[in-house]
Image (cartoon, rainbow, N blue to C red; front, side, top):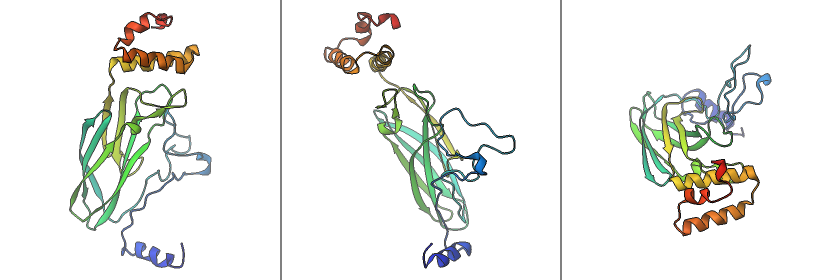
Length: 232
């Protein structure tokens, strides 16, 4: 830890400094459990015969000489695929301290298998004992993106489950966002998925769809005139 490392460790052990560090990895219970990480792809792992599948110390875990309480979660839409997430964070212990609030998000369903949870934002907040701080996270369109079957970032409509907590294993506050699109945009995505199945040139399809939008013609009606209409 360096020449001042001993002093720093002593300060933490004797309570002169209140730590707030968080693990950037998951620590396994045994070498037989490897690999172990918080954002595994679905489905959830099952327990072993002799031990649990959860790590000994999960991603984002950390200790403190004080305690914190999460409460009053509010999620408000502030724009197209933009949300403001607000909650109260209270220091319920007897010491001043810092908490690292973490926001995890994952789609409930997707065209490509997704991680069971994914860290999107985190914030380190200093709170005096007995005080409450209002914390805000902003969700942007990029937070809802996944890598689709064409290996490109896309956003799919549907339910997105999120939670806020002190680590990847503690869901202190939870909420579900219903990300909706206009009907013509949903059909556009569906058309691109059919394009994948039929191995049609994607640039040609995209150009055709953009032309439809410019003419302000219903995509559903246009699809009925194409050779792909039996797929619906």
